Image (tube, rainbow, N blue to C red):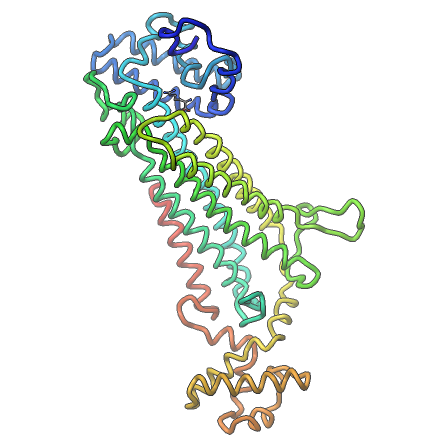
Length: 461
Ligand code: ARG
């Protein structure tokens, strides 16, 4: 049965019904729709808008329905949307009393409420996955503080860094993602129920009671805005898109670093794939897929922003398009976070090769310039002079680390024995003791700081 057929004389066309329906995807809201209906029914009973015993009966039946769905005994089909499905089933079970549930409510405030409840739960669950991922990264960082790799800018060797410092960089990104989701949660945690179709309701409902039953921190303050606002969906998908962007960048590094040109890392056989034609191949399909799937989530973000940009106040059916964008982004980011965490636990580092790579490419040239500055040369002059030394090395097939002292001194009398130490990659990394730098003490402090900030985010547990 449709919820709106009274005004109509004829049956609707099958094509129109098929096109209008959303049950094929909004069935995912069943749990939150039923929960919100239980709270609404209880409030209707408490305020005596409907008799209390009838409200109880509605509540009990809804709980039974939920249990039946969970057990697989109630199939979610045969209705326009999840709200219609739940109401139809309720009426089928308890008859006329069930028809009172929709008193002082519209599907417009109902669907906005369901979706906010859904997003709140989803944020909590995605934050759990981010936390797990950061913990994995912290483990890896803890085991690699003393190892050195080349750091890159423009994908050219720049300066040597600590492997742990590099890993921590990703933890910082995922920590920001956690903060972003937490912030998004605050704006999602506002209850629209009680806004009716758009103008509010003339029944003496108790919105605070419903909000507290549903654990909403706040209540919407403008009914027109409340039924049409989907900012929280756009924001949620933006948070997902940013996680994907970070995972995609990480993937790109893993793909590069596992190539024969780098061979810094090796993905365990159980998380790699082969080629159907080239027997020697071991392909990084998982990071490639994560990088590829990032596009989908960006697609969802573009979709929701485009849906929202053109609709007049207040509710318009365009808003039904919010759900697939949301669910698709959620499924993708969940799958990617889960597999990435497993993948990271199955990667080994070739620390010897990384260190060797860090010592070639003149990565300690900046240390020479800094040394000359300490000896009194202005930085620009120090930079130019070091550039000449690098050119000398390129032309004569030498390395900064093994260049003899007299050669250094032929460029400047400011050089003494100490320079031979300063150009070593280990010294270069250790010299950067600044907060956030590559020295072991700084990297350990970074690990502690990440751990602290992570624990603070979950302090209420
Ligand atoms: N399936 C609809 C949606 O997802 C529910 C709200 C319907 N409201 C309406 N006025 N037709 O948006």
